[in-house]
Length: 175
Image 1: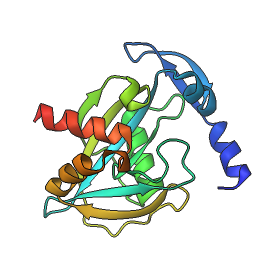
Image 2 (image 1 turned 90 degrees about the vertical axis):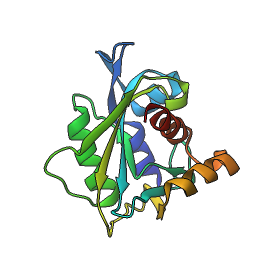
Image 3 (image 1 turned 180 degrees about the vertical axis):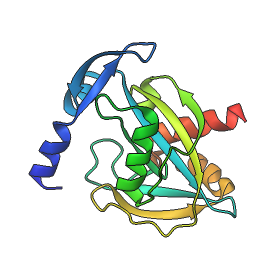
Image 4 (image 1 turned 60 degrees about the vertical axis):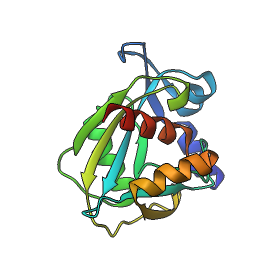
């Protein structure tokens, strides 16, 4: 990633929230991550009609979990942005899926170390692709069965982003 893109990312402004996910201020991406401040994010899980999930391998330029497998799409909420608006924006930016409204909400997770201090809403949608992967965000993407994801996380947990591993385990506990 060139220095201009990194500086632009570090300057992004996020809402900082309290333990009830209420906005209490704003800070830059760099300040939020460095200070482990509570903030907001979305994850979208895209499934095809065969029940496979599309996973992305994060770019090595990412500041968190570079080169790790992750949700189909994930990202922070911009300051003042709602979860549903953010997931629609992120799906378009990261994988080229244009939606007019948010997909199905699966569950919310409170901010904790495992989520990178993010309050997270996880969404689900069906889509067959093809996808237009944002090269600064995503190295590659692959369809995987649920069984393949479960086995791979057990075999090599560090190949998966910590937030994804946590959300995936929470989802399977709630089912």
